Length: 139
Length: 139
DNA sequence: ATAGCTGCAAATGCTTTGCAAGGCC
DNA sequence: GGCCTTGCAAAGCATTTGCAGCTAT
View 1 (cartoon, rainbow over the protein chains, first blue to last red):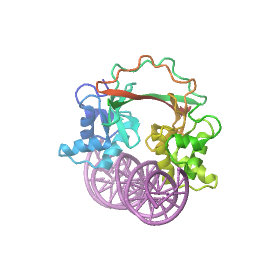
View 2: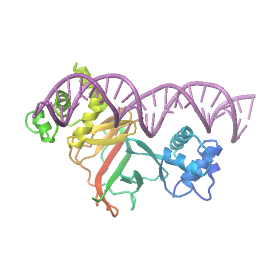
View 3: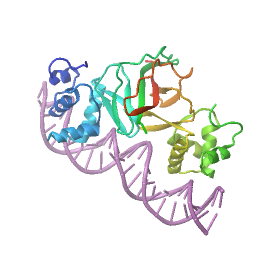
View 4: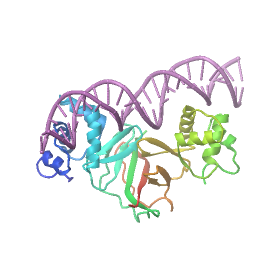
């Protein structure tokens, strides 16, 4: 489904990404990639670490998330001006965002067909086409 | 083109929106709505005010932008985790975002046809479908 | 051994808030 | 006059950074 194949071999995943398999990174790998696709903030992830009785500083969580993003193990999703979300699903896909709850999830049914992709203006190339379907609770 | 019709009657625009036409709001209206569609941050707008030799505090600019957004004179666009953009174009449309320059602009050719709109999950309704085409400079 | 990591605390940067003074109706 | 606004400075919050100590190779 994503880059993580076979059996929880975080160690080799990290090596392949050129990152040293430290205790902290292995723990974060397990939480991030061990339960299917996830959409998570640094704060939430740090909370999960603490709930497990582990201790990784919030700064390290932030740094690690960015290292993973640079290493293309994660994608960043910009949906909320006050929080940064990271997505373990690397495929080209879109998102539902439950505004009230602050919950982000993949749009079921894969990528929407968007018809002709717009042309990139001269001197530029399209890096990504982000689609976010914002949801509110029914009143 | 947008809510602002005829001739720069910011005063009545504000009244209609239920906002008192103060000196600051009138000046911000002029800058925001006087030159066609704009995509602007609080910081930039504050800069323009100062370039004109006027003086409106940054806090007031922020507050005013949010008041305008609440009054549906502006739309907020979430594209950059470090900055909040406001859009004077209220129609349903999509955006190009030049990552490097931090420049946001409307996608030419109106809204992309996206095929069938995804179904909103139970208990929710779709508030908006945001499409952002992220652009990088050609290497 | 050494280059790379981590943790802490401090710094940053955008944004919001509290409250006294000022301005619109 | 009364109430909404403004302005400033201070607070807030998520995130980043600097640096000393630790760790994987």
